[in-house]
Image 1 (tube, each protein chain N blue to C red):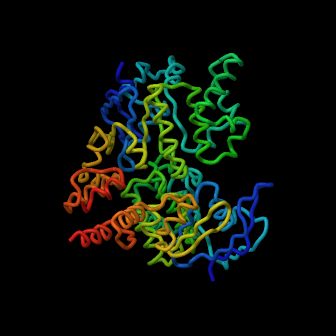
Image 2: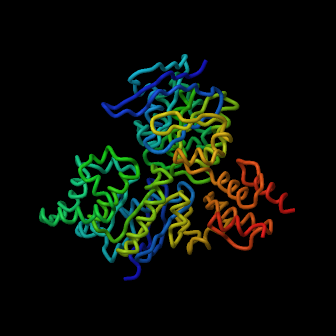
Length: 257
Length: 269
């Protein structure tokens, strides 16, 4: 059993922010939570991470441990060195090797141990923030807007890391993101929030290729979906929706030939 | 006077880590310059240096004004940083007070402050937000309030460091258009550090940094077509440019096309 939310409602005073949410996380998968600003994503995540209580409804975590990687890494750091930051989350404080291992996993080496996390570059800060969560060995890792401020190589490394965590370490990943092209690239399952409600959920290709539905819920479709859609309409073709540009180009090339 | 930002022989290090070693950069007045490059290239550090957050060796001039303690006030009249997280910047109960605060700091008389706040609100079409708490607004509205405060400040140079990251894609385009119009109308210079491709494409000049050095600079299409160099640096190429280059490789398209509708019409003719 994984994480299950039943009839969740939430409000700040009179301001309702979530209405009747029923959701079961896809355990062992990479999940994405998408929706326009103000749709309730942040509150929903705060409820799953127990930062906030719902006004009504049931949250079942079933002993699953949850790690939350903040959008702004500086909000997460409270120690003066990377070593101290990571050691804080370590059960066995003497297990220094695990600190090195986790750093390596996020693409940093031991030369970072003595550095002040607040003095690192944006990309490095993000990596340390992820390492600080990984070291606590959670079952579910939630990433809040993880691509903000990352260059393409760092984005690719992050995707690779998430896939390793999912496939090798059997973690469940949840990505909260506005970066729809990033989500389309690699997640398995999508939850779409709109105006306080969960309006759609399902496998990525099903949800993110539904052009009309995305428009209705103020989500700009992934560029590959938009392109495929335009080509199909303009040229009266039936190209398949692909999540990789090279696959789409091969399909197009075949038609031309 | 055509060059509003002049950086000469800049030397700066974080502890032992030399970020800039005799770095030189000039930026044209009224331009929109996007500074791009891999993480750790020195982009954000450069903006922090412009905002006087660290001491350095060399010269940084903004509109011929040098940043030294004696002239600090004059320097900061000319430059303004739009925050990534507006909540960090807000200090007032209402949007009106938030915009007025900047003018109060300039010691303007109350009548003038009131008139100016209303004029700015009209220009940005946020009159309906004036009595609201800035904290209760949407991400896009919050950023427009920051732009209103920026207009009250009336700077020559506006800096943005991943400023529009928290905003919906649908609102982002509107804010970019608004900023571009303000830039042209008031001859403001915008310097943006971003990985956001929509923002990069809006610029009229791109500077590519790596390890504190300028690797490439020039007009956006020219710079962004340097696929090989950008790939090596890990700088993302906007989707339409990357697609154009790939289609060109397959002989399906002759030139770079940024408009998706036009591109689709051009292929398979």
